[in-house]
Length: 389
Image (tube, rainbow, N blue to C red; front, side, top):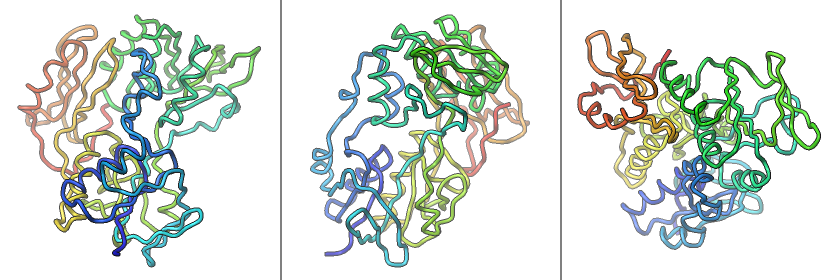
C-alpha cells in the first residue's frame, strides 16, 4: 500500500482540506493526527455561545468516528507528534512512526500568553479551542465579574457575549481604541461606545501589570497604578502560530510556517495552511483565506498544481451591540472617507486615484456590504494590508 497523505491537526483547516480532497479523490489513503479527541466543531462559535445558551457539548457537530466514516479517513486522536523527518518522509509520534506521501501541517496557533506575575493562577484562562472552552464555561457558572486582557477581535466578541449573558465585563488594552489592529480609531470608538452602553468598562492605553489572589477573587494591577478585583480573567491578546516542530525539522519559518503560493513549505512534499501558515509573507488567521487555501491545496495534492488566490475577504465582527464588517485595505496611499453617525458608520478607504480599496461598516450600515464589494478595486494577491492608522 502506498504511503498516505497525513494531515496534522483536526481544526477547521485540517478537516476542510480533508473534505476538499475527498471531493476530488475518494480512495487515496488519508490519515489525520490530532492531540485532542478529533471532534469537529466551529471555532468561531466559541465567542458567542454563552448568550445563546449553547453548551460546550452542543458545539460539537460530529465526533471522531463520524468524521472518519464521512471522509474515509483514519483518525488518530490523542496522538502527539514528536518530530518530523523530511528526508525519510516520516513522522515520529508517541509509540509509532508514520510514513507519508505528502504532509499537511494544519496545527493552528496558540493563544499568546503575557509574561506577567500571576498569569498561571487558577481563574486565569484563554480560550482558543473547545478544550479550553469547557473549563471557561464551568467557571462562568459562579463568576460574575470578568476581566478581558485585550480589546481586539476575540476580546470584543467575548465581551459582547458575556454582557448579553448578564456578566460584568472590564477590558484592558494598551492601544487607544478597540480593534485597533483591524479598524481605524473612529470605528473602534463606535464599538467601544456600544459595548460601554451595554455595561462594559474599558481601560484603554493600559496594561495588566500583575495578577494576585485576593480573598477568593483575583486582583489585577494595571500599568497606571489602578487595581480591580474580578472573579475570572480571560486572556485575549492575540495568537502565536505553532511553528516549533516545523522549525526543528528545518522548515523555513517567519511569523508562521513559510509557504509559497501553492502552500508548499521549504521541504519537499510538506504543506501548511490555516493559522500556522505564512503564505507568501501573509499571515491571515481568518476563515475565508483558510477555505481558499484548502481548495487550492486539495487540487495540488490530486495532481493539479494550484496557486492560492485571495478573493475579497470581509471580516465579520460578531458583536451584536454594534455589528461590524471590515475589509482591510492594502498598504497603498489613500485616505478614509466617512458617512453616518454614532455606531452606524460607513468608512471607505480610497486610494490616490479615488478607487475603493477597503471599507468598515458598522451598525445598520453593514447592509451596504454587497454594494461596496461590487465597486471594490481589487488586484494583487500579494498586497500587504495596512495597519489602518
